[in-house]
Image 1 (tube, rainbow, N blue to C red):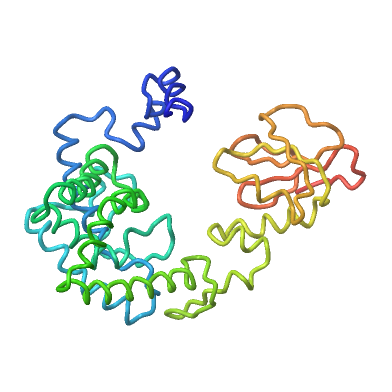
Image 2 (image 1 turned 90 degrees about the vertical axis):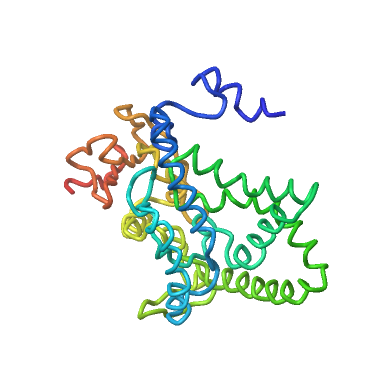
Length: 328
């Protein structure tokens, strides 16, 4: 069943069923590092992920909640610092770790949220310490996700979503505990708080709130009040003027040859009705006379007559277009 997922192709191409080319391994894992480095940095990462999991992600970033959150999390730095562990160093990381982790209501950055603190961690600890049989096995499986992530890959603050898999093992324990009389009232309160957080996360999602709000002097516009281009560039706002200029110049039914880098999204250029036809073009390849050309300067130098859109993007009119620009 796993073979069609690409593991066989990975093994044939890269010599490993799960990891890609060596440069990707070095960027994301401990590939090429000594055992001592792996153990030291993996232990730091274990502490980092544990601290990250103790969050209240989903709550709105209103000042009084942010201040309370910071005050409650401040003691989390005491134990690592007492042990001489510098978790905010770059050792063993792809991106920096911070004790002062901002509340997040965005799936790419959020961890377990408040239910992790109120339900999942208590259930996991209970299952390991006092559970038996299946309960202990589920708790151990959930806890195992932390060292597996910590010791196999560099720390990444966006890996919180990976721990949803561990929550699957722990959640049944929390559900069973809620049936115990002494635990029932606490579980009910925790679930109500969790539901409030879920509603808040939807209404005030980071970068894409459904309800506009002003927090700490910053206006967060509702995504429902944004036009199409602003919605698409809301997390890459410097690109917005370039996309608007492209929309202004290129007809909605044009055919466009596209020579851009792998990190640049092509869907931005199809147009409101998806009427444009985009053709990926290798750098230096000929361009049909009736086609427009979109070029990223880091991939191919622009010609003297190309139109500068911004953010490293340049536009070339069709050779048959009588309105060919004579300058930039």
